[in-house]
Image (cartoon, rainbow over the protein chains, first blue to last red):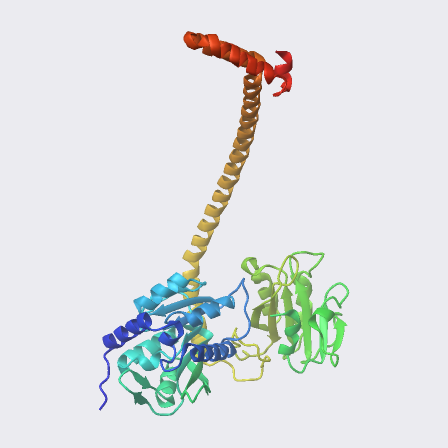
Length: 214
Length: 274
């Protein structure tokens, strides 16, 4: 049986990794070099654009949440498109760097299950973050909370694998599959729009897209 | 979104009816499909479910159509007929209630309101997609840029509960926000006023400083001319001699000879006067 890191250990692991690793590698794929990670980020960004839509308007910007933003790559890029972006991450080191880099988004240090806002988001995205929550109850709290932040007609975009079952990779990654996501999201009033793989260097991960319909 | 991207959101369009003075102000901007008939609105002329009523509604009578002028066309739309209204008000100041009143009176459901690109001055700032319905049409996401669907399943109870719930809570949150915005606007107006006052004061001070600098320059010129004059230099040489009488017997004649040799070198009126 593989030893799972506790929630606190995972948080420490990521904070240390954000301090230790380069900008893209720290939140991207640790096996890839910076250039490959750059492609990997762009690939996922373009997939996010497909899901969020290609419309923007400076007068009426979309309100987006990048949950588990790491060093803020997606937050900054989405803000460049004119969207109003909140970025949250549990890592103090990552949020400090994000705030130094600026670029438009507002950043807060927060876990995914704890984030509260009076305004609902047009889209909430969490890119390759949920499978690093090792505790199932914490994962469910986080996923439910993120779903609750999506307004009617808005979208929840989750990076995870598209198999039916769940699977543990090493000590700090549990991929949850359709059998776990779909019933939970249905109970949250979210319609399953589909899952699309990243199609990047054999990555088994892709984006789940849900739309709030009730 | 661009204006020309709006009509493609409606499928199976056979006729486009424009409500305006000449009935074809929008034809080019909308890039109306060639297969559809484009005509001005004429009261009583039959419309079918393939009809889209278009109008550019707004506050400027020279550029826009009045909301009340669109109402008869909306009311004549049959079920399934659609409306595309361009609005000429800036989104933050949009008095949407007038438009909404007419749409609801005509039995039209607002499907989506889309902010438009290049919205300045009298141009269209946003567009309303609406349809004449006899039951609630499927809710359309504000993020959607897919063609409008009217004949899908009506929203279920859960969707309606969410809709009304979001409305109730967002209205509650709007109240303090509205107050905060009003207070902020007042503060900004006050600060703008103060800035204008300060700018005026700075301008006055700049003028005073410029005058003082001009006087100072003139005074410095006068001093320079005085110091360069022969009278001053002779006087200075004599005074220096008086201070050191022991050396005066040599220094005063030498100084005077130097002044005499350099006569005319400094020029200027002071020299000429002395």
